[in-house]
Length: 259
Ligand code: URA
Image (cartoon, rainbow, N blue to C red):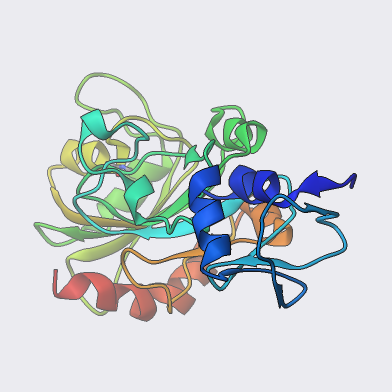
């Protein structure tokens, strides 16, 4: 990579403005290869040095990919006009100015949400042509019924006449009101509308995987982590639903059982 000014490099990859970067430098909070820099207008080769700001490494990757475990009460938007946004949960050293949520979870929904500044990848994920697998765990108002399995598999018709793509659903041995559902599309309020079409009601909904990328158990609600390029590729792989249910029901049901 050609030489670039340190403050430009940091400002392009974080939310810090140039003046905040100057302040960080004056507080000795910026390092290059472990050495404090007094002024951020020096030139660096980001591919060959390690830069930190406020104790966090600033990576030279072109795009950044953040996995957030979304808590309830936040909207998937970049505009404050829509209410408190998920962007407020991303620490400034992880956030770049062009980042946005690549997907939608309702304000009251929980779980895996990708936030990135890679518009092309976001487009690939959101495009209806790609049929990315998404698995949710839901807490229902009434017990799960096995008849849902065939109804969902055969392409359920919603109350407004819209027909869904075939989806997989399984009840849970631990609680008769918990279920996992795997979708390959993303219609508005789809999971809630599907259960409502079979006479049930979703009380709590949490997305637990995107492709074969599984929400890590250690990531609490409101916490986020940076993904590597190889994790991002997992978004386009399809996990085996029955295997997923066997392995993860007990892990994720604990999140919902007391909600
Ligand atoms: N389906 C819903 O109904 N809500 C979500 O947040 C995601 C999928």
